[in-house]
Image 1: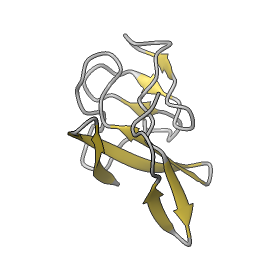
Image 2 (image 1 turned 45 degrees about the vertical axis):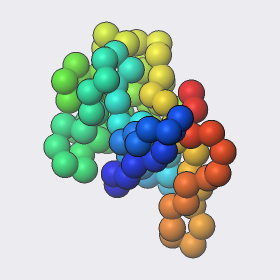
Image 3 (image 1 turned 90 degrees about the vertical axis):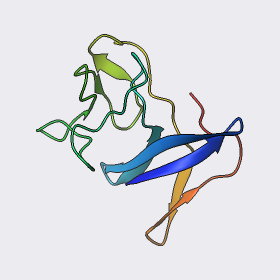
Length: 100
């Protein structure tokens, strides 16, 4: 799912995915250069469903940590957004968002 979050007075695009039963959320921006990750509307994962993929550079990120395992930004991370899940709802947590 896509959403926006306020960070330092600016509206930032973000997305949330479910992986291995847990919800994770990240700023929708590649760690290489600031372009959106999804290769199609609502499509974040590679064909095997193992990695989040940047549609522009092909960078592959671990969905549970945002860590880049392949591509031009290998070793860097997506900026995480603090979320939790309660009774099937995804909640944005108070505090500084996003964080790395």
